[in-house]
Length: 371
Picture 1 (cartoon, rainbow, N blue to C red):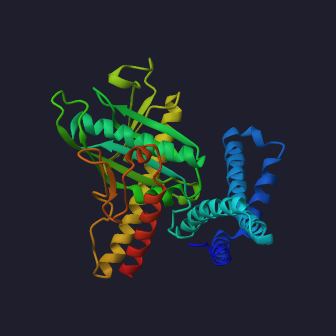
Picture 2 (cartoon, rainbow, N blue to C red):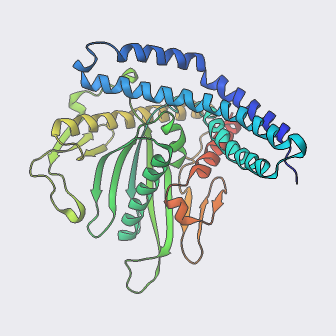
């Protein structure tokens, strides 16, 4: 069937109009101007942490502007390509090139459109992701490590910087838990739909009888704390323990007590950090993640109170949200959206955008249905 390029291009332009409206390019350009001014201050590097924050924000803002304006240019270029392909009776080779670019452009514009759906209070934030092995013994620990690699590969595919904050290795293989940051705008909005219980079904590589094993891992996603959030934690509410960092198999990788375990006494929330070089750095990282978790908890309590006042209290949507089946067949299926794919290797290699997009659309629909 012939492609109606005129209608397809019209649809792309309408979507880009919505993207530009939500992105607020005028505000973004002003933000870039302010950051460029700050980056040229002669005393900028007197405070290295502040300087890195300024340059990082400037880089991300420029990339964000380029994403939108570059997409507009691609739509213009596609229209020119179609005109070249159809003039003088048509050029089959150029027409095929135009069809390929249309397919790629629809996918890219669709990803930008999904971002316009992220209007939650913290959706624009960077994200802190924690993965914990659950039931299933060594298979669960191995599964936790597979999930961590999946998310880090996803971030790498998008060019998002990541920083591993803590890794707690299991005795035989895999991870008991791991925490890492994804340092990109809207990382929380995208990855928040990944929170919940993930299930793996496969023939266990750790079972010498080759039996099928079901194992579980939990994924927690919180927005990165910002200075404007005002999450004050009194010193008497925090218990801090220090210990030596450990590597795979429990081996010591540090001869000093630089690792930090921070416990928030009122809530029982525990945060461990061991990937920074000094105890001071690990303490600061632990406090930042603890504040992020308390921020999200406060938001959840406020939401629950509003729902209770409305007489509509529902269970969390995030539990048991996805199954990864490697035997007796190959399939990854999201249990909320019904989205599924058969290429399990690609999913574990970070190709999860379709799951994230369907999750965002599902979450938005569920929110609207609730009122």
